[in-house]
Length: 335
Image (tube, rainbow, N blue to C red; front, side, top):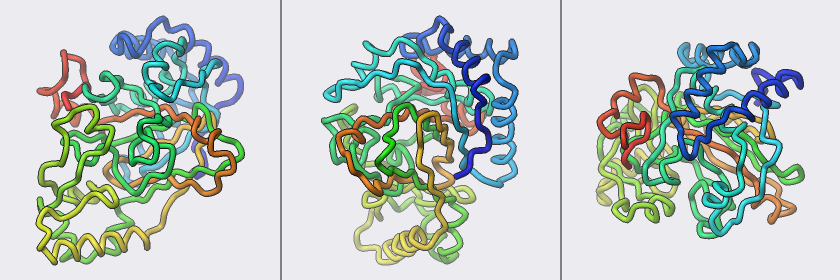
């Protein structure tokens, strides 16, 4: 994918300095961090090119032109430590002393008017997550895996799911080829018959929770009944997991079969996230996956690190879940 905006070295350095000295830690006081980022915007200390890029992302979403964007050469923390992979989240709290990457993601959220979302049971309710290999989840289908991820929406089984995802390349292998793939939901609909689309819109499907979710909350085993297709072209699906709740329903299995055929036929977008790349995609209005194309140095690739956020579509979408905000923190849902 081609970047819609690339930071100049001057703007990158200027914004990096501003984000380095914010005086707020998003992991101990997210609201203070959020407000500090808001002040940078109000004081017009954010490069105009990035502000315009965020406006373009918002406009192209509203006009339904595209739901996938890349910004390159983003500011990053100077010190990007290697975390202990026996418990990388706790080690991050100990080692990470600056929050430039988090600042870039928060700026994106505020400038596109897509408030961030966090889960009380995931990473202590953090709003910023690491796509980073954790030894406990090697070979699994979670963001903590060290291998490929099948076609999916993030948090497929959960009742509250993000509308958008943002992935910022913090440390990326230079020799090995790891691609993020994205397919627009409108592409999928081209290959699914109207009759099967209606079947996919029925609450007739279930999705087991992923390994990380089950470890975080033992009550999370299998989702409630859900649709596979909703809204205009939103999908709720995790390949190899989502299935008809009724194993005897040949019609629903046929609808899933045609949907999976559509995944094979549809036009995909690929992006190899490199350091400083910010990839922003729709979580529900499309599907994404991770493909390991050519891995020459697996141990180096296991140290690949992306900083990630979940976001609501707009303030109204966030307000729908206001009754489950945890401890009054906006966007932190009890899940």
